[in-house]
Image (cartoon, rainbow, N blue to C red; front, top):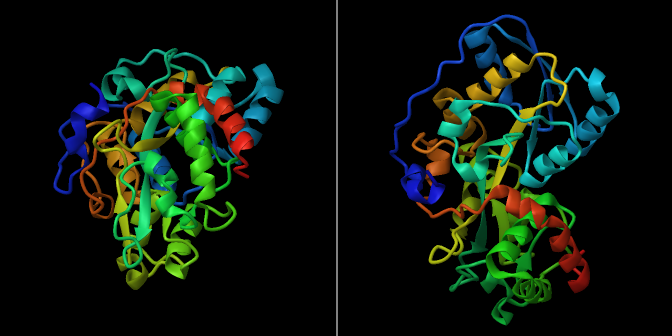
Length: 343
């Protein structure tokens, strides 16, 4: 089942429609290497331990550092699971040889095909839509697609992150896949010409740029905005949020680009069975609902309900482009960025 056939998952009143697989009670431990930096994930870990009896030992760090560490540890690595954000990093881990293929009918059945590695070395468990935000007072006709962001009508109005950021790279990777390299480079050149300031900061900074008046249009992952709807975020209070509108891009074409968070079993996992249980737990209704409630993400499993802060953004069509295809285009994306002067 593809995500496009389950667009109604992104509605306010949706309730869970899938059955939750049982992860079973076991013993022992699980060594988790994670680059997810969210305090709310503590609940995921404690719920897994309560359900299974498996204790989780964690090592946290940046994705590239963890991958390098696993390579250096080799066959002596204690890692059972690598958990990280973005397709490109998951593919990097696979290319580095630090993941292994696994068999799990539960994961294959519950997760859409495009969120699964072709060799079952990694799986996506949550998503964020990368969409257009704009100042409602200054932008009467916001762009309706990523390609429209290069329109000269928006010259000097757009804020974005640097080209070295994985969100920039995977968005460009998707544009290459959907429209071709020539069109992608033409788009990038026009987009750079429309920058209101040099690329800088994170996604929250792009939203703050709208509030401060530095720019009129920006791109951000949805969970940064939804988080601000749910709780106070510096510079993004209720009054500020009320001034910001949003567009889910390319709704009459490929759909909105989706970033993912996912994980896989380490190549030399000493607790492989427990590692598979953990991944299967992340695909359970309980965990999937908490990705939305705890961190304002979209579930990967079709039919799982959304938190009100996520559902408030409305219904949309996501792009179901194969995640591995996007990651494969990252080197081309960076070459295009360099060619057009996107810093």
